Length: 360
Image (cartoon, rainbow, N blue to C red):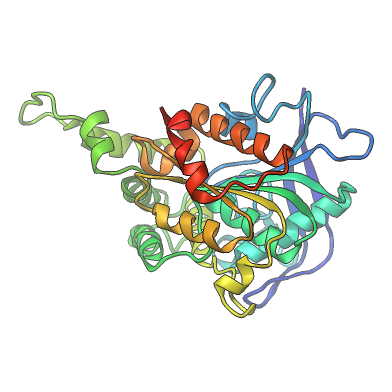
């Protein structure tokens, strides 16, 4: 059964950084059915190179018999603007020229993506989102939505994300863009432009997604003879090739800039003031070994979002743990759901005492 649909907004769409898109299309997936009062909506926001197919990239959490079960919930996941999987992006046709945007695709921000999502929400006649969840870039979207529409989201789940993208994270992203820029094909206008640069960019990104201990274990040196590729070398090249088969350098470049744009305090009196405006019941989850979105960033969110609960997760896999540690994440969310059903607001220290039950 095909659960993928295309929403089209055939009107100019103004962008936060200036300029506009003459029209907007969003590819989205709808799983399950809304109940009578449409109170079972779960909106999933995907990460950097993810897609609207949440059952694919978040298999451990989305699907029948899993935490987000389409037999219980009406689950929506939309592909972000600028991406490669059906929404308006650099390879889309610019109706003003009849040609792909390529390098002329304008800069977009997290707020632009959320505003586009809200157009889709209105089209689907969704008046309330029971749960909005996202990790990494997806968490940035979910948080922004909860701030710009405080009465829309009842329950907010933020995983391995932040309120303002750090200079550290921006530096990683700029290093990746530099890798794309030195590819001699990058200045050309065709779908494969910059593809070898993107392979190097992905290899750079992977270092930030994992960490020192991850590589020590998963790519351990095991008597590799001289003249043969080290496991870590083969792994980096494999990851670059793997992404090149399913993505393009234009989208990669644009979405890295989107991540950099995250600053919920912009025009709102600062980050803390913006976070204090969140009305949703909120669970913030951080991964102790995350080098890209360090756990202190999630602790900051939990400290300043009113009534938020904080949960730390142990994982070997660093930032990528939000895509891998499905069992631990499921346990943590279920435990939090029990608290909010009882209308209990556990303090940080109390919830921290339960941490071993989740990660043990």
